[in-house]
Length: 213
Image (cartoon, rainbow, N blue to C red):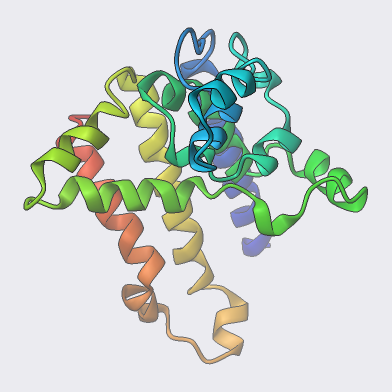
């Protein structure tokens, strides 16, 4: 019974976060920012002409219409957005990571149209960016990565933090699960989990440096 209640509470928390993301990023447009295909072109070291051609394939007005196939195909594009591109695509990445498109993803996988291996990893990107932002020895890179989020509103930034918190809680819950107990894993072992610690550092940095208490 307790396990069932915990599952319901977790589902409610996720659904609430999904709704918050949808509302916070509602109406955000790409404008003249770098889109998904254009960013992938930069990653592939395409010429200026090539990247401009790729841009014609980009969704620019409604981030909810960005196809999952395009996101998987352009899985490394996330490293080549500008501020407008980051703000426009962020909600889609967050929802993808939260499993909001799980059924659609599975159908595409079954049809051989996408492969799980190429799923974009927004969590890894956010923790990587946090490491750069935390590096006091490189002010140039720090300013570059801060600009990534210069167009985010407070509500949008808060969604990013809530996502990181949700992922951290998921890891923490595993260490107190029956599965972990059956394997003889102590609940305190979470304090040595690399991913858990990285997420906590990211949460602390974003909360303190982007002033979103």
